[in-house]
Length: 440
Ligand code: LLP
Picture 1 (tube, rainbow, N blue to C red):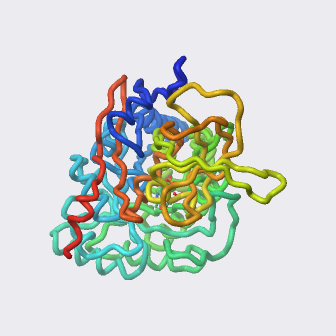
Picture 2: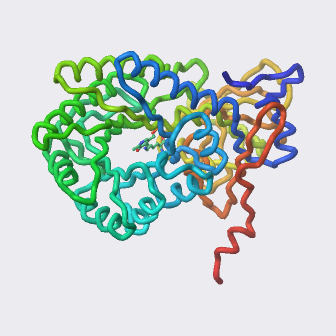
Picture 3: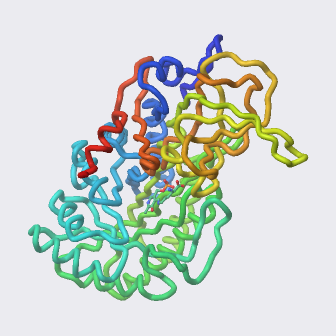
């Protein structure tokens, strides 16, 4: 339910506020977040997974993955909609705590947590710390002792299912830094060590298989493997781990015409596998948790840019002999994803009505390298000109959160729109802010 619509003058309205007005008020580039859309997507995850798993007989906690975008207001919206908050660093944890999220509703991840991060998390009484390596077992236990608490611990395991961006592939081993291998036996070793430790509570097994996943079958395979691991662990320790977290990774539409997977469809399919596998194994169902980030906040965000230089470039390519290069006032510093992953986006002129003649265009940033592309291939109106406002949709996730100050460019603000009004959630950085860090 996006509240984005174009009026008779050709102006895009976001949450009831015109794009021209947003830029006039808050400057550009600008991250605009539609609060109603964010909340609706958050609710839809809770509803879809709660319903699907209730049908097979268990309950679900949805954690919003803060790495996609975390501000104090965003954490509050998610929590008000019934989500908990997944953090990956002490910094994200600090935002969640500043937002007033109760400790038990916060999780902490990370493949290289510092002792300070572990201590801060336990002191806050987080609901779970997700362990990612064997050396964390004594370290989290020491942090628990220091804070006078028992540590609720999950263990992140790798099932060999890797998904996202392209079809999932099943391999025996994954040559990457996250988690502990099920096939290689390290997962079982660490699970047993945690289960046996007097200062640790083994609260669950965690699996995250990838990101921007459009094919639900990877989730099904991973869920089945985790449940078998859980049963095998119970055979050794005598205790069934109460919870299984299936991670995040739900894909979204970036381009017009792309169809994201419906949360209800994934939830239904995964719940069925969970029900069936537990029946097979003769084990009671675990409580389930998931950690969507992108699918909650991605589509709720739009970046607005102002067009500067427009240049006709002869490409030397017979297929597209001439391309219009449209330079905007941001670029890879506010959206690294095209440069880093070759990610595709769409752009449109949203500040006036334009003619119907469209030309092959490329939207580029203001940074000093040719890979600084915002939208690689897009048809834009032939008369696109300096001062036009361009909107790039679906930039709510991993835009602001991965932004940099490359070329000493201050990062844009995050502005929330709702019911015809806008509110600054994170203010625009200034060059003075950046100079303030420089000690001369
Ligand atoms: N849980 C864990 C343990 C994760 O590692 C991640 C993402 C998530 C949840 C949330 O995944 P999501 O639902 O947002 O796909 N910067 C990349 C994405 C990196 C995702 C890393 N982990 C991008 O811009 O595409």
